[in-house]
Image (cartoon, one colour):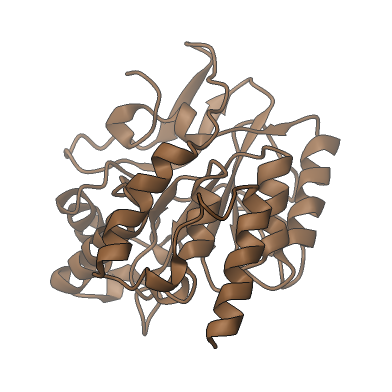
Length: 276
């Protein structure tokens, strides 16, 4: 088992193009250990993630229902004439190193929503993605098991699902998530209240799902199968991710679009990087 861990560490180091001196001792990154606690901040100083181009002011607007209740807004797309879409990837079960290489070498902005139950077998894999430019956001502890639906959990259970996952991500990656994605896109006011109490500034769902690893099809939530400017695309960490990701990039280019960083189109008040 240790030999497999070392091989995986070396593969990820090669993917990132860092030297053995810069790559952390992954074997020591057991949660709560001194090596774990010192890992991400030290690495961040060695290799900062890329910064993505920001949109021009006034060229976009976040699409969400304005409820005026002081809770995190639910975002499903960005209203913009920019020829951009936003790729988001959920859960974390598969750890495809070739996918990291594509993200890094082709400089593709993505956003990752991690379920800790899936991610805990390979925290270092998502550390590699983070340093390739992918922010790590919150997707619960165990996908709101056994129902996969936050609405069927008590307020206390919803709070644990969001807060505990955010706490772990903060320790693992040196940054606490500020954006929450509910499993299956299902939420209620209790979910949004728990998200606020856990430090989440927005709830991000999606306008298009790519059923990678399953049917291989695109499906719009409002009907159809095309891609449009401002779409938030959902994928999952499933087997064959690298090949499916390349297929999606081809479809995006054929539609005359390009991937952009969702954080640059979300204001800081909603957990993004944009002013306002």
